[in-house]
Length: 241
Image 1 (cartoon, rainbow, N blue to C red):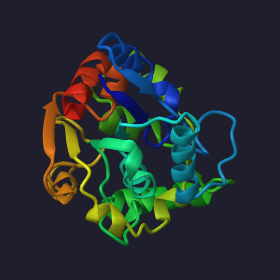
Image 2: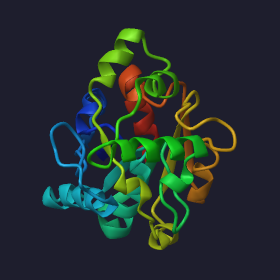
Image 3: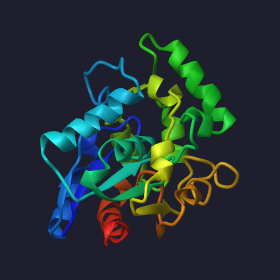
């Protein structure tokens, strides 16, 4: 059985993985879901991308976890790519779930379509702490369109403002692209968080992984809430040897 470390995306914290962790444990795996620096309720947001990476690395090293299947959702694709540069000896496989795989030298914001770039800059500038609060209509229509209205509202209340600096930090990633770690891409086929086509997740992001395992399932960007059992099962498929 495997040891999974599940890294959340923007506006989330580790608690979002609760049902996925439970299912992975039912399947006999060990599963951990850290919260990245600057994320979650009631914490300071003055962090950069390196702080997020360091918090994930510290979580793994402090617990002496090895032979890890490291899973990253959305923004966390940029984090697990960097973690793989820092502690590759502790990792067995990387799983990118509808996650960003930035080109070397780019930032996450560079990989977003123009309308998101404009919106994120405006929201960060309007905040008093350089954060982005995701508007509910974007959450409802682009992130979790497969949820009931009640679930969409309840899960929106679990979100927190996202630090903007990690979006704009440029990432070298040369060591990541030289890595021979096995990689998988888990693609939810109804994910609209990035608009399908020119800016879509797959194959735009997945194709950058070189040789990789593709696993697909039906659902939105937020099946972590709408279908966590199936998500856990597909993560297990993506993470197998």
